[in-house]
Amino acid sequence: MLELRGQRVLLGVSGGIAAYKSADLVRRLREAGAEVRVVLTAGAEHFITATTLQALSGHPVRTSLWDAAAEAAMGHIELARWATQVLVAPATADLLARVAQGRADDLLTTLCLATEAPIAVAPAMNRVMWANPSTQANVATLRARGVRVLGPMAGSQACGETGEGRMREPADLVDDLAASAVPPRLAGRRLLVSAGPTFEDLDPVRFLGNRSSGRMGFAIAEAAAQVGAEVLLVAGPVKLATPVGVRRIDVRSAAEMHAAVIGALPGQDAYVGAAAVADYRPAAVADRKIKKGEGAMLLTLERTADILAEVAAHPARPRCVLGFAAETHDVADYARGKLAAKKVDAIAANLVGRPGSGFDADENALTLYWNGGEREFATARKTDLAHGLVGWIADRLEAG
Ligand code: PMT
Image (tube, rainbow, N blue to C red; front, side):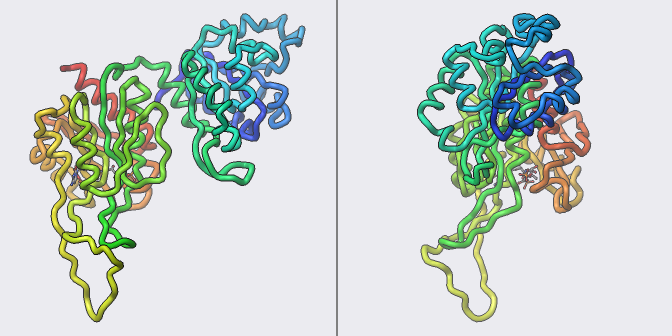
């Protein structure tokens, strides 16, 4: 897990329903080691109290530019200088507009104008407000000025609608902030990641697939982007949002994944094959729904291309190629066998077929095998394991 030890985070909360999550955010920021000071806009005070955030942050919460006692204790310019990072979460459409215009009409916008610390905003609003060209223009202005825009996510909204506009989860915001505080070890490097399952169609309504959710591969893509890599994610059919700063190509079948990965190979420094690619596909795809008949039905399957092995043997082979092995038994033997047979730099092996780990779980446990060594990664969130794997890749690339 990345940490925020030594970081002084100024958390600005503006007036949207997602403000209730700022209590959790403060708690998580402090758990990660940060010192936290909170500023509420007038709108935010309708959604969460200063008392709650004072108790959680351990410091008085500022709400007004005109509070003489608070200004005497730590003036707003001092507060702007104190911060090593500024995070506005949630950032409403109005707050984004005011910061984009360089307004200083309340304490939070004044601090955003007066600070030299990096600023990140986590937008949260109704999906139509987010899609509005005014909001998008304000976001583009902020990005162009170096403000990091974290999210929003797609999903169900407090207003009852579904779409893009949910605030990024507090745990993810803490990871984003922590990553920006660590050395960008993969800056200037390009990383290609495959994730998720592949679906092999039998007819217009049926397919052969597997239980991969894509979480492991998405976590790796996110962790690599957080330490500065330019990441391209080739994703099978999954229901996950694209990690911040990651470019994504969506595919369905093993053949499409093969074409996307091989096509993107030139210039990559590393490839991570976390996808659960089908080894077999139906030899023929019926163009009409297959009708049932009497007795058993026999399917003829043919092999798909082994993408990982092909990447490792390709003239444009990235310097570091890391594959996975998903096994239900004899994990170490099969993993070492894949390391040799596929001629990759490392294999991350996981035991699959039991609940709570491997496929479609938030957590996993891995053993990384390479020629001359192995490392255990004990059960942890996939987002945490991803940082370990990305660290290993960075070591490998730095070693040359
Ligand atoms: O997606 P999640 O729900 O988070 O689950 C994560 C995971 C269990 C899918 C992941 O941790 C994992 O193990 N991914 C690899 C799954 C797999 O297909 O393993 P395998 O042992 O069958 O394949 C070995 C390696 O060859 C893998 O890197 C795979 O991407 C690659 N391969 C396999 C077949 C093929 N045709 N082409 C390939 O590139």
